[in-house]
Length: 626
Image (cartoon, rainbow, N blue to C red; front, side, top):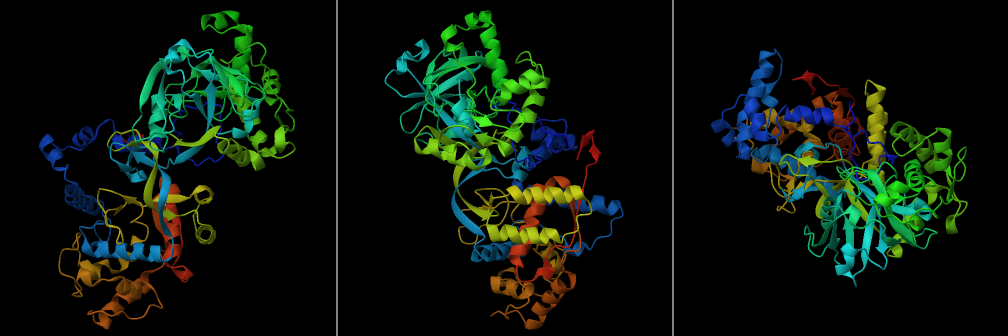
């Protein structure tokens, strides 16, 4: 699959170790066709303006498309038992009761929990934005950063003089808190717009508007979703600011210019998001930081970041560049890379070493710098040994979280979350990561993950790529928000202000296929007469238990036993699912949830676990993969 371009507010250098294979450019394009807006997409399907208006009512979608899908499939000659077709929302009372049974069972088994969790969130929609609610960014989850607080020291830059008396911090998002011992400066982009906003504690944070918007949904501001802007400024207006940064051996560092900071995310090509400062630093200049990730403020660790080393060397060598941005010699020339990590084959100053080896001349040698960081970054994480502080002699991968905690406990850093890549909701809203009260499926729970892995071991996947994708997904999958406040779906039976979202109510409906025809009689909405004379309200949890669980006792019910036995026989005849065919792009979500929910619902009946999954590739539709 094509990889979706990583327009990141962090430096391009930062290689995220867990590769979740989340690129979905082709699928996003297929969803939107050649039109950017949903109205245009509907028009491209041949609908008139008058017809498009009808789709403002959610239930009209259920009336319009299913019959057309059936018609098309019949015209292709597909042989299907159409009696088993059904609508999967609460307009179908039988399926609604089935989903309620599933979720009551999962909650009884402690698979569903409630609490504040980070989730991809659409401020415009006012609720979590799950994969099926996204225009772009399917499979993208929250990415944790360490937000490094670099305190602005007196004398303040003229642009900040009106804030004298306030604690002002430049804040940088990093994935590498362990490198903060080696900070020599921080990077800003001269022509980038920044804001200062007031946090809930009264401090002033300086970053991009986009980053501040994210922070406002994570408890950083007094009012959720509100960014109290106290100052708007350009990067060049605070270049040369003296800073105190955490962990660094330099008492003061400076904000310097980096021209590679990109405006679509928020980091720079120089430093992976995560190189930080400790005691005091100054702001310098870089120009490859990307603004759709990160904060537009970048920590600089030239000992371990080839980008940072190249940019700092450029600034030292080019007096004209320093003069252009008002950077005095003492802000740059005394600062040398600090040995903080010993890496086999690269030594204690891996960035200078690799830049010399590859003959990198400047920060504009993008291809060579990309090669350099690829060679040193992963090796540094897995094989690097710390040379400084209380962590001396310990592996980087063993102390990363402890170093982060050290800064968090001292108030020198905070946990900050962003979408791994840009996520756009179907309502054309750029999503944030929000700390939300929500019901969630705890897919990270150890025993549940272990059972899902056991299921995968015996699953026929037909190709190794599919198996590897499943294994990778089970490796990183944690909590999944299963509730939202509006849309189509079933209400949570114990908390009806919430709807069950569409990736959570469609994980075991294969079991419902086995009995749908006897309950609904071929009526898609389940509004007709049941062939067995069973009414939807009679389908209680105990009734569903009896049908689907071998050892469940006969329930207290008005339904005659022979009718329930007929439903039970249908399920026992057809299950397990011998083959599930779906798209390979659904392995990281829908198909993995399918495994999880089957092992949870039939934990004691392994013979009911899925047998095989065939993950399809893509076709071309209108010259786009789909």
